[in-house]
Amino acid sequence: MLGLLVEDSTMVEARYGAEFAKEEINRNGGLNGRPVDISIKSMEGPWGVGSKKAVDLVFDEQAWALVGLLNGRNSHLAEQVAAKTDIPFVSAWASDPTLSKAYVPQFFNCVPNSEQQARAILDDLIEKHGSDTWILVSDDDYDSRIATESLKKLDDLEMNRASEHFKCASPDDFKALTSMIRVRRPGALVVFCEPRLSLQLIRFLRSGEILLPVYTSMNLLHEQTFSLLVSERLEDVYFVNRGTWMTDRDSDFMREFQGRFGRYPGAMAAYAYDAIQVLAEAIVESGSDRKKLKQSLSKTSYSGKTDTIEFDRFGNLKSTLPVEVTSSKNLYVSKP
Image 1 (tube, rainbow, N blue to C red):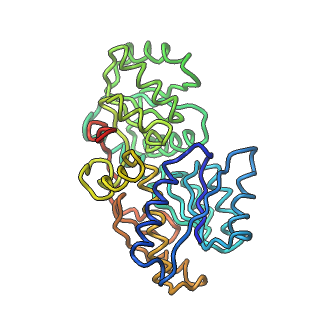
Image 2: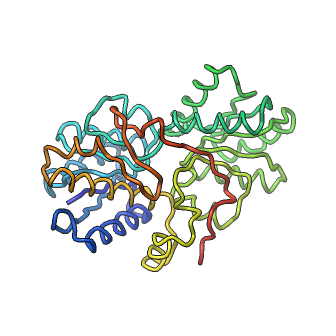
Image 3: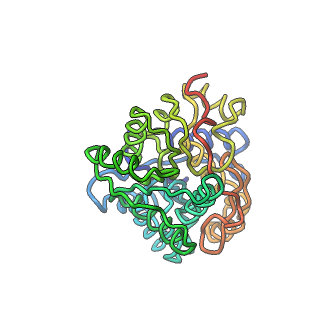
């Protein structure tokens, strides 16, 4: 049995992706002849509740490994449980680079961390906008702060400094940002706010005919905002992405997922699917030997919906794997 941890009970993308992977694995004979099952628990509630949910999966339900579609703070809780119980924790959403810097050998991350995302964003900014200035917009959300720190550190190191750093706490700050844009005339914006605030800001800018390119992190592809980003056709939005899951409209994954669940898969579904498949391959490779599972995961080379997944010695995606910036114009339509 595998344990899946999600942010709250209203989220369905991660559940759908994991269930799709489970059904596919079981159709193909299961894991070494045994069917795979997934127990899903939500980490919603007061701070720290998530630790108990992770512990319950390990001790009460005998989970072989944990998969997390979580933010950075909750991922740290799951990582601590994995370290204390010596079972693998495969993160499929959090981009906090300090997760790997805790040097927990049970930790594996299927997504590019914020340092890798910052590298891709900065490279694209320089390539497309040259010496043009740009404005970094962020709020005080935990993951936003981590992304901002990663980009600013890299930007300062390379002496390609943004013209301004604007702190945006709420929609009340949008007009002040608009005034700054009209005065500074930047070539682009980089927006690292929590997903809903980022989407509100992009809508506000476009409604005011401010058509600047907007760069952002994978967080904008969160379940809360992804379908709206697709349906509203917001253009000139650039975000980090891997694989072809969102542009390959004719893939079996797209068709079967849409037929099963009545919707196309979003980013969280694709990453949940790949995380379960990565674990399944590792379990088969280890011969269903719990003690060998970590070693099998460390040798993973899986080609999935979100591109190749291989881990470095700290559990990050290997830095040699491509992390690219994708335009919102490449998003598939929300309905077939």
